[in-house]
Length: 186
Length: 207
Image (cartoon, rainbow over all chains, first blue to last red; front, side):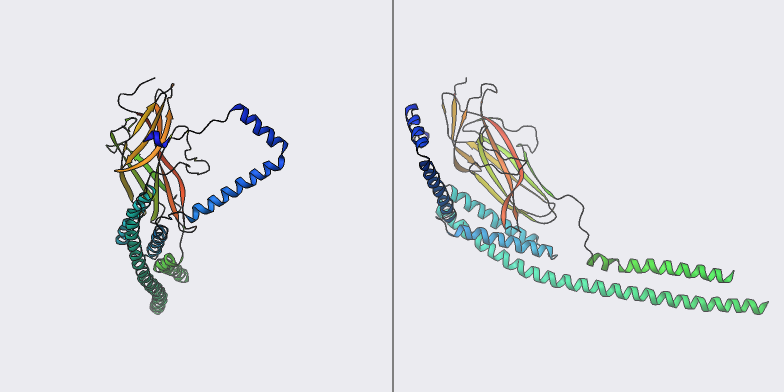
């Protein structure tokens, strides 16, 4: 197996190298042409590789997008204060299936990759939808909680101010009576 | 003397009520003002031996035998993070990740792990590997197939006999990648763990 896959290239002889160099030195335009051709080939190869990435399993690229969108939705739900433990477990199953699909694709098991990608995608869609619902719910709860805190604080501050003023007036009155009584007894 | 006492009371009232107001309004201040955490945010990546220690890593590996290590990640980023680990195999002379400019290795990926970790949590997985197929040709060793967690990968990596360290050396390394929600791509997190392996085949010729 190893022998079959190990290819040997013919080694260029010294004479061939000298001849090539001689031609190139005499023809600078040929160098430019070769470089341009090489650049064009590499650019087209790069574009081609992007287009043909996961070409055998077209759903695999979509699956990665679905799973990352699900992660982003879970992250936002978490930042909104939701408990995302259960969602994270399900998301982990989706990410694990995605990894398995990508590995299966790399080793040429395209049918397995398709099947795993499909499972991962479905799971990712479910997680994303639930995360969006959870986020809405958590945002609403968080807003209500914040509103309650602010109202309670304002009420508390008002109560402290009123209580302090009331106590001060009461103290002042008693203190005034005490002073008047002391003056009368004199 | 009397007016001085009243003045003292008034001062006590002002101080007391100010403290009470501050206490009562603390929850609102905490809700409205978000102070950024001063703690450093990072991810940890480690590899442990089969006993979950750092003592007995596989080094002298023979084709056909199975070896186990554990890969672990701890998230200290302040929120749940989506990680990816790429497992790669190379010989000592091949491309390895460069720490100073955070560039990953250009070697082809063998295995891959995707997972999401909650802030402060740990993720761990066994990495069971085996050189399935290797061939020695004079002073070179060619590893053909490598099995990782039961999946066989075509590696095709040649190592030349190292006469100083006496062996055919390979590096099995794991790179940590992190999903960036802003750029919406996985980026190399500049974390890697690697195992140096001195590979051999049974009944091999030594130099």
